[in-house]
Image 1 (cartoon, rainbow, N blue to C red):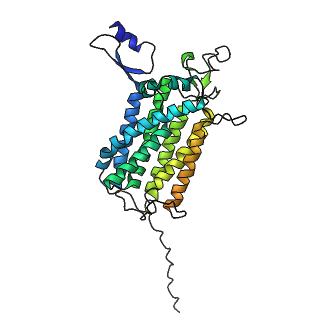
Image 2 (tube, rainbow, N blue to C red; image 1 turned 60 degrees about the vertical axis):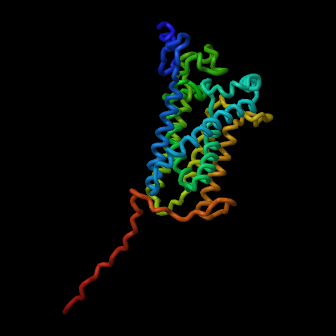
Image 3 (cartoon, rainbow, N blue to C red; image 1 turned 45 degrees about the horizontal axis):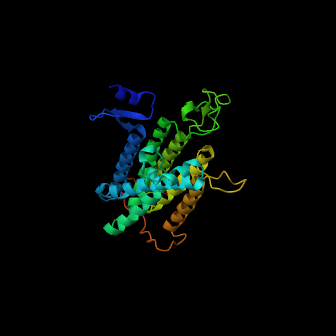
Length: 325
């Protein structure tokens, strides 16, 4: 019983402690893992609805989920570890000295860029083997990813991680000393009452706004929307948002360059790649450029449950009665 009670004491990130029937340490379930699972479910639920509105069976989402989810999780972990090693320092050396730590998912450390890249690669393989429309599944998956990512950012708040620098703004959050990174561990310069930018909430808000914008475009301009346009929109909006938020993320691994460029994070560079690829996909989908190897869009799709854009009514001229004398 004492071991079970100690599992909860002082550890905010632990959600549930299950007593070990064989003795020893209790089995811990972390809030981050629970919220990540909820985010995956919410994203998949929306993806089903999106595909059904496109006139296809939503079962393809559940069929493809394991194909996509496992590579996405592995890619997110490998991308994170690769960034840390490339950034140098003791954290990267830890993985080089203990390669098995790379497989320790419970220790934390995932990266959304790796998850999306590996996940999209898995979608390409899956759709080519099953003859499913790749753009349809990618559009649905990335729209769902916006919701799932927003839910996952709540886990960063619970873990008291991925916060920004100190701020005097009223919405700043207090971070306990044990969760701080240098130089903010100096309680003389930064007392416990110091507030920090809640960058996890900034990103969650941006993701929800991006979802709302793309959702509005899907409904308002459904007679002009071609498959693949939402994929380009996701990459463009996610890249812009992350590039901006990186200004508030001093904890991110940086590219080893000489001053004054030594504070450019890997995430900021990948954000620019997102923006570039997203813009190219949008231009390709609407025949402004031609990306070799991509199937040409077949035009807008008839979607269920979406109102068509009402046609403009022509004003009728009033007929005047002739004047009789």
